[in-house]
Length: 569
Image 1 (cartoon, rainbow, N blue to C red):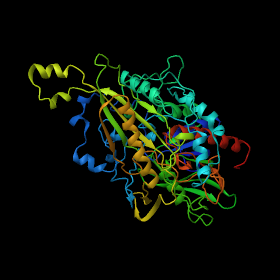
Image 2 (image 1 turned 90 degrees about the horizontal axis):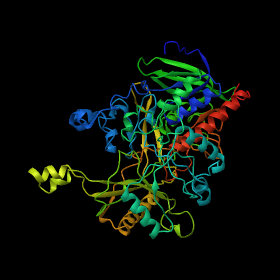
Image 3 (image 1 turned 90 degrees about the vertical axis):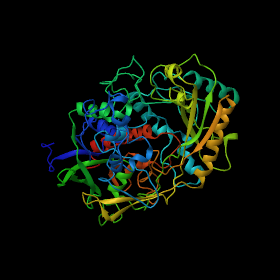
Image 4 (image 1 turned 135 degrees about the vertical axis):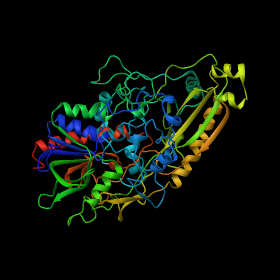
């Protein structure tokens, strides 16, 4: 770090080291660009900085639950119900040190360290289809995507093959096939539901989740090995079995000799030159010393997350851009989307008492979208669709407590598995509403003197109508398959809870209604690219990280070509 001087000139600067930032760094460096990678948080080195990776439940005080004092420091991060567990709470921010404001509740889950949320992500990896890319235009909602599936398909190929995604090809137009390693196995109860659904429904099917875990022993991934079925992923994986920036893309960038990585570097602003109509660099505040400095480059990639990247652009004011860099449309900070979930059903199954499963599979079943994909699937009450994630498992000894067993009976109970249960949880698309937004509060500054963010976003009628169907169909599928004691639930929470926030600097065809073009460039400042969730024009109903990676790889190669052709001189 001491060798990095502000006056140094770089070819490219990447802001953020999460899923998008790691890919931007890798592609730019492999294209020969001298690249400065800035991370606002601390250094996390692969393996050596995963302190809980091998700990067992009994190694944690209070079974891993935070104390009241600890929870007070992460009172917003705690809203998920799992982020503050001591196995991985160190990867989520202190809310007292990193405050934000809420006109309406918004659950902003953050990880400020090298690797970002690529360490803690859910790893489910699905492609968007033309049903997604065309939906806004067909329905007259928001603006049209400036790309179609054919534009991004080769980049999905590249990313899947590089990160290692396991799964099953299905031949569905709403969920395009990909390049997958061997799928993880469904257990016997999940297989039962799969067979029953195939018999009862023509419009839906069940598969194993497509997840960014190496399952192949035939293909090699540098520095990484196959999944060990430990299901301790959010702690950081010493095997590199699941994809993260730390285990994969950042080491690849480093191997080129072209990457300079600087942690504790908070980017406050992108600097704009009115003469060249290009960005010249970024302003940075050292997180530890609060020293201010400037770094210069020909290409800028914002990959700080949908909220943080939009905040940087909004803070980047000039005579040309009084409302934030590239914000001629007024759409910057608007159109916040997430996926709404926590609605579905659970049930018990009598049978298969002689069967169990091997290991702790870090994956579950997946039921792809089957609503509003044409024909009889089209609904009158809501637009777009949803998919289900979930799984079946056997209960454990805790079931014995309710039976009030003791002595010999208790010993027998705790040595035998309980009955089979299953749960399926829907994830639905949220429409892009202009009024769902974030703003900057200059009256409430953070400890570095930067404005705090205020959220004003909510679910609306389309999401509420969709949830009714999500719950009903889940119960119906389980009941039809012979599950007993089928119970439905609906706990909507608030936007942000899905940790899939997106849309704050959307792509579009017209600078008057969007912030970015089809190559992820700011319309009016072409050497600034934004490739995290900010660019999403609509949300689809699938986990978005694979799409962020594919668009990032595509944009980085576009930027490298433009740079080499002297477009940003």
